[in-house]
Amino acid sequence: MTDRRWTLATTTAIALLAGVWARASADAPTFKRIELTRHDLATPGREAVLVRVEFPPGTATPRHTHPGDEIGVVLEGEFVVELEGKPAVTLKAGDSYFVPAGTVHAGKHAGKTATVALSTYIIEKGKPLATTVK
Image (cartoon, rainbow, N blue to C red):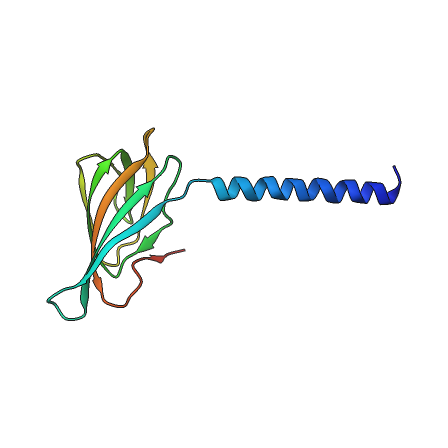
């Protein structure tokens, strides 16, 4: 094979592999927070945010914090909650959870079916809902 044909074949193969990898990455399931409502509270500078949390099989959240308390309930499936300094806890449909403000934590899917939870955040108004921790 000439150098020119080899270069063309190599470039084509690399482009095809990159396209397959990009497609696989785009199709990979991800953890989602879907904001349902947000309202100011009677306490100045605070707001409540209601969120539907979805964990498709194989997904997880990065370690993160919230600028306020998180209170939630698992609606479907199960997931593991890891609060820094405490043992991991597996939660199933019907279980509730509480994450204190500023606590570093993460969640990951467990079980065989998708997990859905409903979380309410009581947070400082104007701050991001979650901040990733390295």
